Image 1 (tube, rainbow over the protein chains, first blue to last red):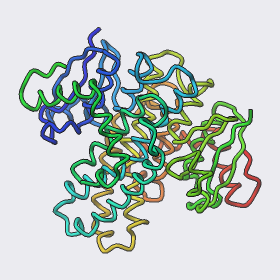
Image 2 (cartoon, rainbow over the protein chains, first blue to last red; image 1 turned 90 degrees about the vertical axis):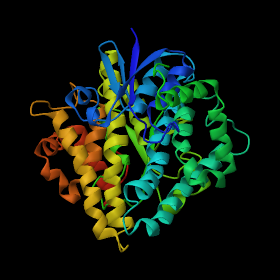
Image 3 (cartoon, rainbow over the protein chains, first blue to last red; image 1 turned 180 degrees about the horizontal axis):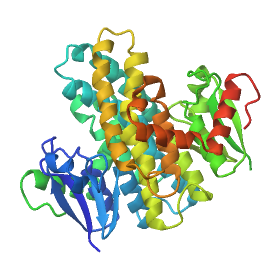
Image 4 (cartoon, chains in turn red, brown; image 1 turned 30 degrees about the vertical axis):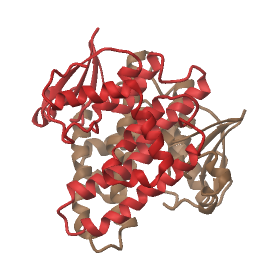
Length: 218
Length: 218
């Protein structure tokens, strides 16, 4: 059965790879699964056909025949559990790698998304400029802790590269436009290691090809 | 081996059960696993001993002998995968239930936590009052979608009660002080069904006992 994911018909970030379909593409590339992409417009995301796949009207979704999932974290975990390459075999190491998926999405990403809120969605509000440093400091608090965890020696968060690293690097990439990543060389080097992976490069190129109007199938 | 979790020495919500240890307690009660609780003060949460367990200096953590986890989502998933009662047996239904754990934590909870930011952490800021309705409307958008998903007939999000419902109800309980939950009777009834579960009641009573200065072990 062919795997089909959804992605923005026109990525709001101009092909920078920050939309969440890139995370799923990356996971599919790491585990060597071919996939097709169905592009969805913003109006179509709120229509019944898409809402039946994704109750919150977002992308990406994942379909494998009649089986469908939404939520990037759930899709990446599903792929990681069923294929080799994104989770260790040993049960305890596996649970720790899964912990980093949740840490990326629930502890590190929320303040990073708040940066987007303050700069973009509330960029025209009178409080935007004064509020920005507060939000930036919440991001920095997390990066100080993440730096300490990574230390100077570890390439990845817990042993070999895992779905936890895939998610953490993906979340941190959203910080690049802010310049904050460069304040934390340990974290910046970690993100660069993620970007250097061939699977990431293929995923990035595939989403960029969509933005540039080339055939979307990766 | 005895399971040990951590919880706030003094819960900031005054025993309302909104701290994340309640979610883990609830999962432990649903699967019938006894546990002990180690209380941690706010200063101790930022000390090396606790940071070795939780790199971001939060609660809860989970220890089973030498094996340790952090992140509520990861702990609940770990328990749900290893015991009966929180995930369906069939693989696809299981993946869908896990999807709702991620949806609760990553799609529904972030705007709800923003309500806390605007009311509490930024409650003294000049923009707080004007910003509140924006954040409230982001929460309402999610509840409209969740209401549509629940419809009028379904007791739970996807078949039988699962770890996905446990997490969604836990996240929605944070809304109760705002009054927004009452605007969505379908969602409010769903939350009430969660609260009515004996396992939730035991978890709630156990965390309240800590706040009231009674022995913390549940």
